[in-house]
Length: 256
Image 1 (tube, rainbow, N blue to C red):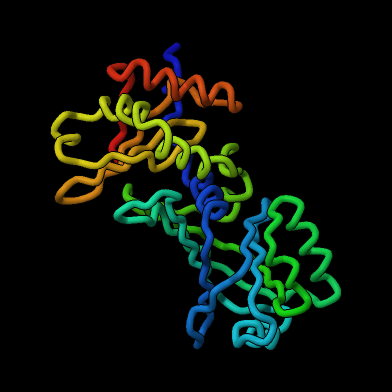
Image 2: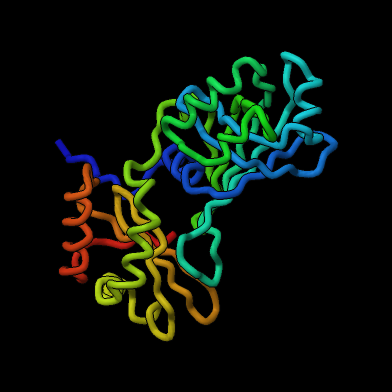
């Protein structure tokens, strides 16, 4: 029996979850209104995303006036790289569905539940200057340099963000600031023509591999270097990165 090919990248639903966890900014689009910024967004496993908007905003008023049926809406989230890159946006996510007001008596309880997994300081404003809404997701689209892919609500429910999502930003900043030698050894996996005259930065790291951003004269290119097998914990992730850096001429590349 032929062995299954190793996984080299997260699937689309995992990418949506991870990008939402990374995203620092989001805009809620509602019929007839300009996009409204949100102060909190948290994608839950049940298939909705909890968001906070100013209590007296037009967005809050429109959703509250729609009653139990809610309003059609799209939430756009932007995942920025934690490094000063020429093009800082790593991915965009659009979540489409129906947004509902959270009853006032349930606001603090929901904020507390969200804070257990996403302790954002803006949750302290809920019930004072901001109000919570729930966007029940019908579909999601994630777009990056590899293109755009979509998933449905059921696929999102069966996925999780990358297990290292909370640590990734600090790791990339540490690599960029203190380990130029590691980045250089990883970059040796790239074709010489791609490296020539380019600036190379660590763009992403997850349980499946490392992605490099190549800032060439003409354009930016993202290249994924997969691990031999997915990392399960911090120790195995560290070993996998060290192995890639020690052996720059082994393993394949995935241009994205």
